Amino acid sequence: MKLESMGMFKMDALDIQKIVDELSAFTCTGSDLDSTNNPILSIVLVNWKTRDLLNQCIKSIYKNTKRTLFEIMVIDNNSRDGSAELVMESFQKVLLTVNNDNAGHAKAMNQAAKLCHGTYILFLNPDTIILDSALDNLVDFINAHPDTGAVTPKILGITGTLDKGCRRLKYTKSSLFFEYVGLSHLLPKSHIFGRHFMTCFDEDLITDVDIITGICMLVRKETLDKIGLFDEKFYLMIEDIDLSYRIRNAGWKIRYVPTAQIIHYHGQSTKQRNDIQPLVRSEYIYFFRKHYGLGMVTFHLLLRFLTTPIRFGYAKVIDIKSAEGDLKN
Image 1 (cartoon, helix red, strand yellow):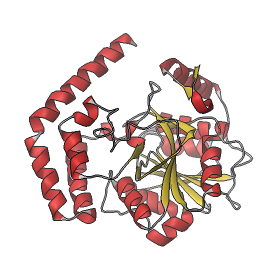
Image 2 (cartoon, helix red, strand yellow):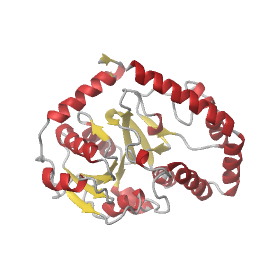
Image 3 (cartoon, helix red, strand yellow):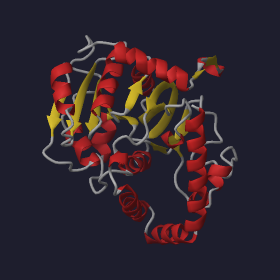
Image 4 (cartoon, one colour):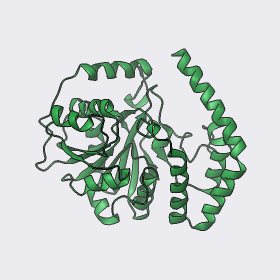
């Protein structure tokens, strides 16, 4: 690992593999900090067919949470892959609910939120690894900043690079245009083209943002009590963006806190579905209509249609580069 400014470390794929190997050898069925008696933090994991990653995620919470009282809730959306049995047998302190069907991600998170006892609620994907004191650092930060309604850590992919979706600014017509024609991908460091995904900003600085991701979203329970829970009209995607907008519109700040870091295996549940693209398209239409009106919906659809050849072209380039990277690794 190479030491960076502000005491931050840059990780690569070898560093992450070492962390994974250490977790595989780690044996723990609970923690003295894991308690339903006045926890500070409630951790919500909505699981669908990610048994092994769920196991790894819970282990990482136990291993790397050092000073925050917490409870863990797993909502299993009818995985039928042994996930529920794993939790019951290996993590008996975890509060488990097994649904009879997959009613959607937002609905399951709301189901858990209504049962949470903590001052703060962490909505966390099970295909993640919590790194050293990450949750402690998030709780410390939001506890020290009463104007902050939600925080997110620095989220790294399995190669050690920043997941650019973990912090964003609000959508504008120009940001949509730059994304659809590929300028935000081609010139990510530009302060014009890279603003939405914040790729032109220092990833190691605490930053005020407009949008954070449900991969790891720590929200003040008081904030949720005032603005409401996730909109269940979003079945699988975009509910985190919608909640971010509602938090900001209610006057709360949202902060990206890179002194807390996690690893994310991108799309381990969604890649098992063949209806993701139409789902995302329909949910974006609902989101834009809800927050911007029909004018933005029309602009979004027209832009998508006109830029289809361009998006298809750079998607192919990205796939080729990704495949080349896999071969090198």
